[in-house]
Image (cartoon, rainbow, N blue to C red; front, side, top):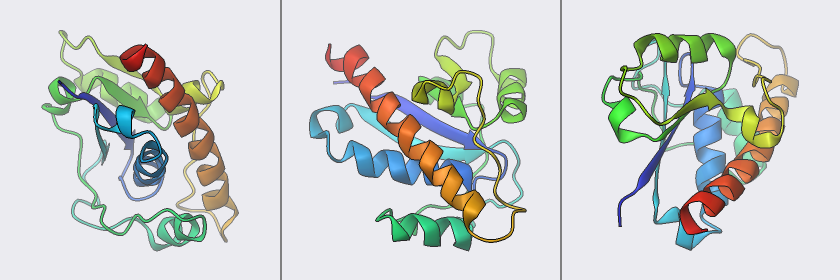
Length: 161
């Protein structure tokens, strides 16, 4: 059975997109029938942090809620991602525009905002990198959890009927 790829994308791939990947993977583990059909990853539109683990604040906040981001490492979006992933989900409009600018003309997958799957059409996952304290990272996690649940529901309907 072929897999459907899901790629989460933010700018540097150290805060929002690895959080989305980690949360989605954890929630997907509760749906083994669906999990076996999906290939999940995250990346950044910029190569600032390639090879680095998630931001320590993202990892700590995620760990408090039971999500382990420790194995994840930042990477940049590549041209190959457009053939590997059917769903490429940006955390914000700027990264979505960057993705659209490098998307090959034949890409027929879903290129959009992650929060669309939380019933928040057009909304962005805010970048917590320059915020003080944990509040920004907590907000990201709240939003990502909601969108992950919505995406699982969407994919279940699409792939399993």
